Length: 271
Image 1 (tube, rainbow, N blue to C red):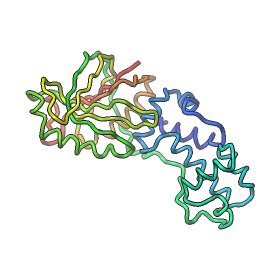
Image 2 (image 1 turned 135 degrees about the vertical axis):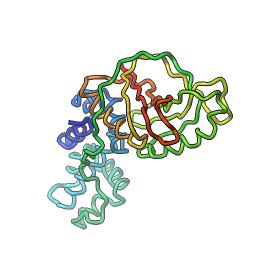
Image 3 (image 1 turned 120 degrees about the horizontal axis):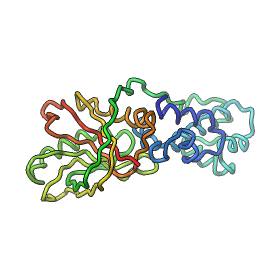
Image 4 (image 1 turned 30 degrees about the vertical axis):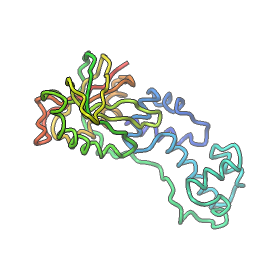
């Protein structure tokens, strides 16, 4: 079972219990950081944002049904008071709990249904090689990635392609993901090693580390499926615990940037 499937199963079957990120991660047999990273890559949501949305959606159904007092619905949704529940419910739905109770319907509400993992995103990933890598000093263009903004990464590479010679002679390029937040958001840099730091570019120090190295073969357009499968299946299936230091894609002469095809290495630091 893919990791995101396990996360969703835990939330759907235990959302009426006090749940923390640590508890969910422990039940899924991965670290909190690994869980948050995989879930964000898969859904564009943080784990806790999904949990809150599901609890409030279930609460809306209960209110419309009208069989429980609002305070009991609030408690079942994990809120300690009527006031806290009302604020959260209004922020999420745009209506007060009493309005939904009076209407007896959720037809005009946009609620969160249980997520289903897109099985087409799971692809076969060859076993990784375990390698050590020296420290890297990467110079390049960066961006913050929130949710599905991962789709904006190709545009970042296009901007970098117009300026990379300002850094130094052509060489290996890197797509580095770093500073992963607890909600799964992260920073991304398209860069390379070189002597110059052009105006508007940043410098990122990637420490020496031991890595699980996966090789993606084919179109760069299919790379998100490989990355998705690494975090959701290949790592947990093999019992590999990623470290939360920067991970990166490595593009060398085996990758043709003109056609977008070839071999790309995905380097995941391990504990």
